[in-house]
Image: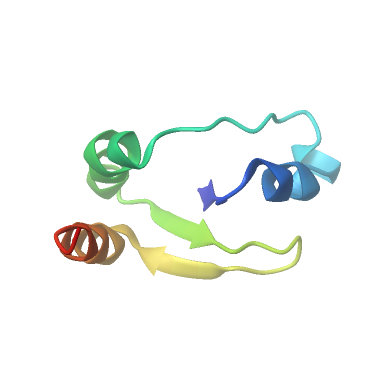
Length: 74
């Protein structure tokens, strides 16, 4: 699954087989509390910073742990 950090970048990436997809914004809280745990359970990996050719792929549990740790600073 791709995770894109801005609507503009999502629209840029929506081409070819992705051209019928629309950007959908979710809150960070929803992403952390709902999306990531479900993706861990389903054994998905997360693709970030996709540039139409390639992306970084993360283990979701690592990302979830890092986000929770970072948010404790605020």
